Image (cartoon, rainbow, N blue to C red; front, top):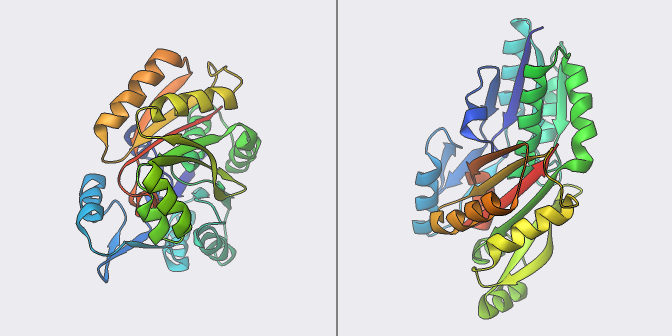
Length: 280
């Protein structure tokens, strides 16, 4: 059974998953100082963090286009593949709509799956799709049905270390940003029905790693032995070291992956971020 799995670059996935031969990531476009770049193609994540820290203007992301999707769908359908396409949340980007429109104009077995998450949350669905493809003789439709069953188990918590990027991108009111910066309060965010939501707060950075592990444990009833965990970070490697140590000390999981925040998420949160996600 020939199946091709596609995802957009709003899905932050571990490098060992990204290298799967049957998986392809379609990049969003990043506009920096009026120049367009393909996400994770024209620059590495480390290079993008440097751009964020030095650019005078905030980078802007543009959705994967109808044309990009249509070209990929036509290519793989003509080669005899069934296609599964996973996208970042339809509530924050038009990428899902672009994929759906392209699917409707291409004859073949094409399945579009709205993860209703971003970053590590979306990445959990990509990881699971790959696992299902490799471990079971399932059709593309059956894999998508299994992904639907996963929804209630997916959790994501992330902390941006500065509020300036969220304010500039319009995702946080200026007053909230000002008060947060003055009091050194960091918001702990999740996604609910495809949209970002602040669910807790922590003062300073020392307790962030502990708080993230507390919250992922609470969300899973303190039982993660059958779950897949992904932990992620941006340019802040020392902060990530603390999270990694906390996870190693307190979590027993089926598998623990590590990845880094991509330009789509970090354009809005800034380069310094910690995140943790879980799913079956």
